[in-house]
Image 1 (cartoon, one colour):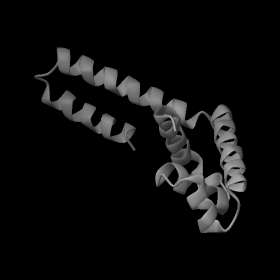
Image 2 (cartoon, one colour):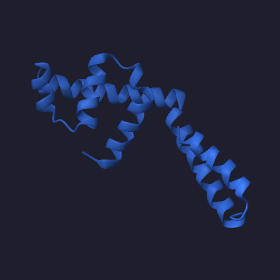
Image 3 (cartoon, helix red, strand yellow):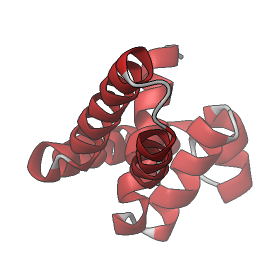
Length: 113
């Protein structure tokens, strides 16, 4: 399993997991979150490996569709990049300004939520 794909699916799952059915939620949580194999999930749910594979692929497609329409992950990442750039700029130019550093810390904390 590709690390980038794993990270992306975990991120999408964090944003859109509540929109999934309980079975979809369980399969993805076990597969991507707990690193279960298809066989282990199939045994856990008493279904075929193919059924698990198909369900996971359809669920991945659903998560990508949600992101394509809602852009929650992309917006979150853009916001964090902007805050990181702002932090670098302020620390480079205004490191001695304690009040500005405090305000910036609050902004960064809110962006991380």
